Length: 322
Length: 278
Image 1 (tube, rainbow over the protein chains, first blue to last red):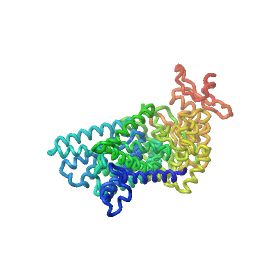
Image 2 (cartoon, chains in turn red, green):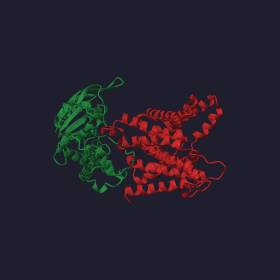
Image 3 (cartoon, rainbow over the protein chains, first blue to last red):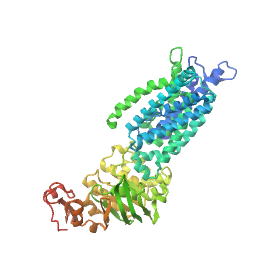
Image 4 (cartoon, chains in turn green, yellow):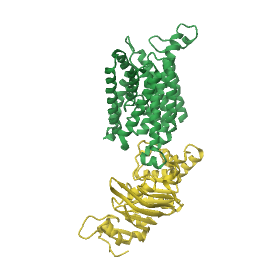
């Protein structure tokens, strides 16, 4: 099958998952429940439709950023959450709330983006020119724990610990009760970040042969790093600001798609976005269907799926990483 | 014309290159030779524009190389590193297509035509859809060279391109490089193997401890008496299997086993050649 055909199939999957996200829940609502005058239209239009759109946007952004990040770090274990970018974004968001900007989602998003950008640049500095997979994952671990500790510190120092503890739950990542307002913040940020990453797709490809070859081909590595930091900050910061940390999407999706679409980073960006949207749409539908009085959090569900996946990858790559 | 003018590089007080001046001619194969630590790869990186010298400058057609935008430089100068990693197992065609990055036309019809032609010239057409990670060492070296040639550079700078190859593939790759030079490309290669350098290169730059010892036609630069002093071994030219003189070496007297092996193992075992011959 041609690449276009495979992309078409994946897009079809996204469309079906989108429909599933609309109708699935503790109460199943058929699509015609959206019709004006139907009593269920409120559920559909104000809860499920924005939530599904947000899942689409956030999932696409995370899948795309995972593909770009793996290409940039030449590291099959890279993911915005594993490398601490999401944790730094969350720290930024909590920081914004700590200094009293909690009322403005825009301010939270801006702080989250600053945290994410700082994380990418710190990763570049910490992992350095060696760019080995192990160095990146270690640097990411350090960043994650540091961001986690600082977040906890801010919560402890907060004048109103109860409000902040609600925040902890939020950091864990969910799409519950997110509406059009959140979508209006996240969608443009993710779209802008995706565009930025897209412009660097061929430069990412040249890194397949290492930094020396990339430079000899005319890639300016510092510029590439800054553009990627900005692009990832827009996507991860924009996503974390409205949904909290949803990890592992960027790890799992490129791996599933690499055998189908090829390993060049440029060929994985669009499939990564589609695959990420598909994964998050399906996962968010499933957490709504999980039994129990309260909903399973999406971030928790993704970690439950993603952590074993990460271990499986580690087993597969440990020979190469040693 | 690619030229170095008073080139100097030092790291942390250690001098890697000092006062290197050389002019390289297009359409010729120039070998950069010298003992370990002589600064061969550093010089090549400077010439490729990948390393900014601390002193002096590199000139491309009489204009400073560092004034050229990175992509423009990349269109003119192709660089083949010692052993490039292959981080993602991509198809051979995609690997060769990376060479079009400076031109930004890998997806266009014209760019694709160049890529297919390069694949065919490198005898890689049957492998084009195979994953590069599945190639043998010799095929992979061909693919990596094709990647550089796909960019149609005026200069091809290669750092030890033969390191991982057996002797037959070395000769084959060098023959290819000679063919590239015959088309007008300036080929500059860092070579450890003095015998291959003497046989294949038109010109040679001999470095020792960061200084340029000699430059000029390979036969004159690679004179046995000069090499003796620099490499600490005894050198001689003897008749090769095809009648072309071959540079061979033996340990200098009293230092058994420290010689540089340049000739075939059998020839070496037969004993050192006459140091005065050639």
